[in-house]
Image 1 (tube, rainbow, N blue to C red):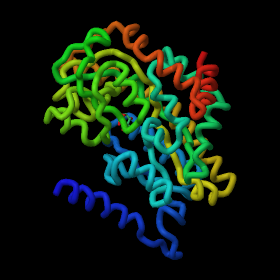
Image 2 (cartoon, protein in one colour; image 1 turned 120 degrees about the horizontal axis):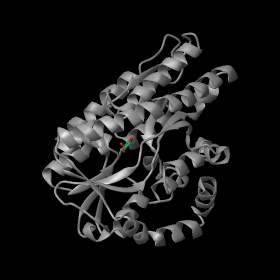
Image 3 (cartoon, rainbow, N blue to C red; image 1 turned 90 degrees about the vertical axis):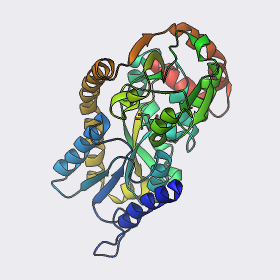
Length: 334
Ligand code: GCU
């Protein structure tokens, strides 16, 4: 029944999106009103940066192009948002790079645990044009391109009631991961039991005990309320997975060169804007989680986690599918 209602909830907005414009074009496919889908709440830092993107697009195009944002996963999970962007039912969506892994294997690079030693290495890779050109344009043949990325912090483990000090403490723990094969492999390498599910289901799954743990940045605790049910947050810093802003390729190509420039500039500027909003929110959220939600923040023996995933690095570097992107990103990061 829940699935059925959920299906209807997803279908209604899609039907609304398919409303026809005055020239018979499908809104979101024809006019200059762009629809953008994402799964975060209105007070999440990524939403604020997407709103800034929308403002910049409108401003730079002198009101010619507008962007309407559908937040809170109203149009479905990230997987569904990617599929809607592929078909052009929505023009843009913001999704985690991990969710893109099953569409384009290059995106798996971000889910390889400890591929970056720290955020500086990640930034270096993302400021390398060879890396971003390859990633952003790689998916054109499957219907979309990326415009930019947003900092989504370092991903850390959080549990309902187990304090984990090193990787041996992971044994038997049921951990939710994003729908990413690489993340599944990571949790197995840690000695725990992975379950992949859409983000919107994590709170209930934690509460009901279907899973014991999840892993994400600090906004999960406060913006998504997971701190109400998860009381230990371990600084494992195992992944730095950016959020990606993707756009339907045909829709992008129908804009004039000048308009494309406006969209790309707005995207890039919103990424810069996002950096400060992000840092501020992480500081605030950590305080709120500690003081108001009684979440304990725990330092771990990070090296034990790093050691447990060395074989994954060798596999990635040697695999025909991922070897090239692995070497490119590693080279750019160092
Ligand atoms: C991050 C990311 C989301 C994603 C979520 C997840 O919060 O910003 O886009 O959905 O991780 O773990 O699924």
